[in-house]
Length: 461
Image 1 (cartoon, rainbow, N blue to C red):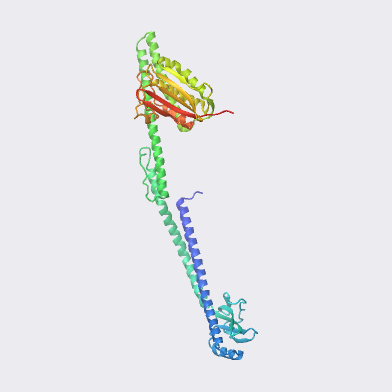
Image 2: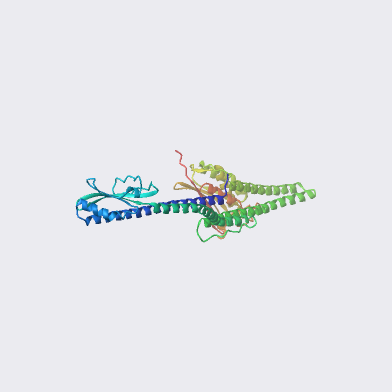
């Protein structure tokens, strides 16, 4: 059964305060009892000290001391009991037991030790026995006094504590309810504020307290989460808008070409040219859709990266073979400079091939006819560095930080009919991230660009 946090906090506070009240009451009882016992012990001890002083001021004769004690203490007992015995078990003095208790309880054996409360004939007693040495004589002095007054004080205190128990319980419940509300009010405020945030006002942020406590940390965490959600929503909106724009252009062109071709009979050459244009737009649109799907899979975490030993030299030579025809069509000189022997690295074959394809395509796209594109590979310490360099138009310095953003195009090439979607370098950066590496760019406007990345070298046994 789920219990609300407020109820749980109330029960927790109530239990704490109720337990604290019980423990405080018990401690008060024990301290009062201890204080009363100490007072009676002190009184008994002082009375025995008086007896020692009285005996020290009398002659050493036993009979004389006995007579003096009878004369002095017979009339001073008043509810107290006193017994004095010498070391030969002969008594010097004893009070009437019946005046205090009948039968009288036995005295403690250990000297200077108080007995607990002993009920006897309606009285509660405290007793004390101590040995006294007076002028070479040893006396055993036993004394008892009534503890009725202390017992009455404790009884009244106990009754007052029992009367306070309901008040303590009620106060604990009220304090627990108040503190639970006080503790959860800021949380309720945060919940109410969060509930007001939707997809139309994601820019709203929670107020952060300056107390630097757990609640301020919660507000900061929620603000960071809202920032990520807002960024994701903006990315989705930008992606949707750019994708719609990119797809609308080729679709409009395809529709226009088809409508024109179907209006009147055309020559074979016209139909051939129209179909070639439609094929170009279809290829561009297919590439755009493929890149969008790939980015969607990557963002959703559905794509898996499997790092295996791969001969990078083989992949580079394969990329050159795939793009040599395109380079010749664009009047470009495609070169490869690298190690002839195998260069084993840990990589995902499909992803690395795709990244090479993106970089080479990007170089060819932005290099005017008559230029060159070069692929390089070299070993640097325990990594293999791959570079794709061109003699193209270059990238402006202010555009370099944004070239890996989705749908960003720094410069629209005029020498190619096929347009770029602005997604290639974003995919390349994601692939580099999956291989725990990065793509570095050096570019000069009018002189070309150089893209580099590295992969860990694998040394087979």
